Length: 335
Ligand code: BTN
Image 1 (cartoon, helix red, strand yellow):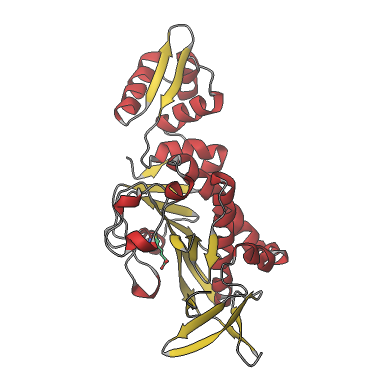
Image 2 (cartoon, rainbow, N blue to C red; image 1 turned 90 degrees about the horizontal axis):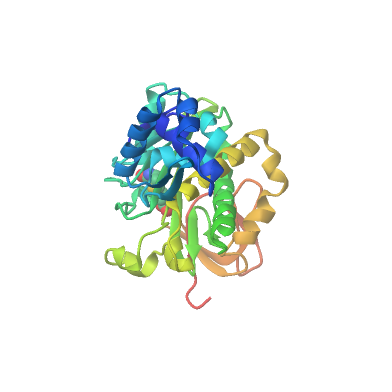
């Protein structure tokens, strides 16, 4: 798997042509013309792709058709699914990295132009909120970090993560016909079990976000028996929930497209029109008794949803409302 995928690489061009014309065949001469190479050179490229897990049906006088694709993350295949949108974002696809968030931060610090996304099949030091570890085995799950240079006020970061959460839910709902829930501020759930988490990190200059990394860990295809220890009870994958594996590369491309659009709407500010309503659609806490831990202070009450700034609203037993910008929420037992 190459680290960076360009929308002009031979793999991208071939896969894009084949996907675009599915289920029809694409002639060798068309591929040769698109690539500006001989038909023999095309054949060599196809052999390279075969070695990476692709299968082609080749029929004399008709050309090639895609009949098998790798299940694991494949950068050129993700880019081919993205199509023309692959030109608006750079993909860094790695077999292994410490943390995609850390890699994205390093690339930003080295001056890489944004937006870009870092994807990895496996992380050796995947991180979650509050310094927790994020289990990141090479098991068909997604570890992705999107990097932007937004020039926004730092106060908007909280809403950013929540807004992205809503967008990821909408994408999952469209893609798998199963609707996840959101637990403020950054958990994606199915049946009370965690299917994904988000970690937004930013470098801030005096009054502006200099750059921002939106990290998403999504349990896409891991089998039920793949979780170690405690996680077996608390975690779930989309595949487990819907009962069949997802096409990880197509899903990843759809996710990238969605995150880019969501980012544009966020920067334009027009997301505010329906942000709170959308959050409420997926909110698993609203109307339920919860406890919020804020440092070592506990606050109990009924969750009322979020406000336009992404703060959690709680009504205490005396009927007073409170807003919280940070904290760890647990649902009261039996609620
Ligand atoms: C959480 O629920 O606490 C957030 C989990 C975020 C995990 C993702 S996986 C991709 C990216 N890289 C990391 O090290 N963390 C985020």
